[in-house]
Amino acid sequence: AQTVTQSQPEMSVQEAETVTLSCTYDTSENNYYLFWYKQPPSRQMILVIRQEAYKQQNATENRFSVNFQKAAKSFSLKISDSQLGDTAMYFCASLFGNEKLTFGTGTRLTIIP
Amino acid sequence: ETGVTQSPTHLIKTRGQQVTLRCSSQSGHNTVSWYQQALGQGPQFIFQYYREEENGRGNFPPRFSGLQFPNYSSELNVNALELDDSALYLCASSSLQDPYGELFFGEGSRLTVL
Image 1: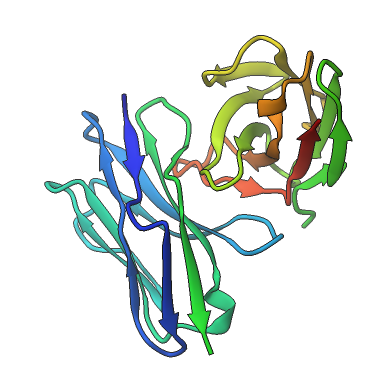
Image 2: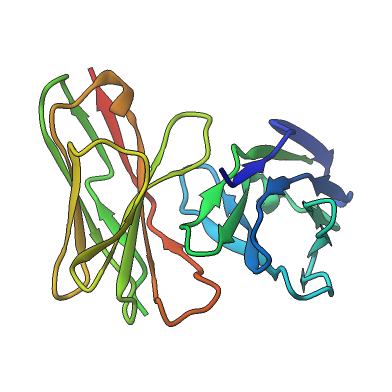
């Protein structure tokens, strides 16, 4: 089975600091997509960033960037200059082959003022 | 551009009852997926609909069923409710023409089964 694992249930960081959320996955596919989704309290889930497995360059979206290590099957999210609005649940997710989007169990991130 | 909307936002049912949840997809999207998110867990894929046909199903029993209408809106029906069905049910729309498969989520329907 193809799986996505997030080993950090909760994290907290001071405002303006940098934080890294971890994610590992397991697949036998060569072509797949990886995603980080953000779910703020009582609000809808939104896409933060995505990575195509065949692209070696790490994706970046403003303060959000990923460290994609294909051989290690690792896909971590780095949030720079963290803001109070970054407080949310963060889900790592994958799209392997013809399967549907598979989510990890999430990391609850709290930004402390 | 209209986003994904779900109704109702909250509802309470008793064990054995039936429930119908509704979803309006984002304009221009032809695919709807339903996910179940239990408390403290990540969303679990229930099924997906494309052009009114089921296009993939997760590990959920047949009492979970769905419909997609010509306007791409969708319903999730759950029969014979069990206590473990208590969860946030998320609807997400997408376009199969999108190679990334990005999903656009609604705010969810929170179901409590007593």
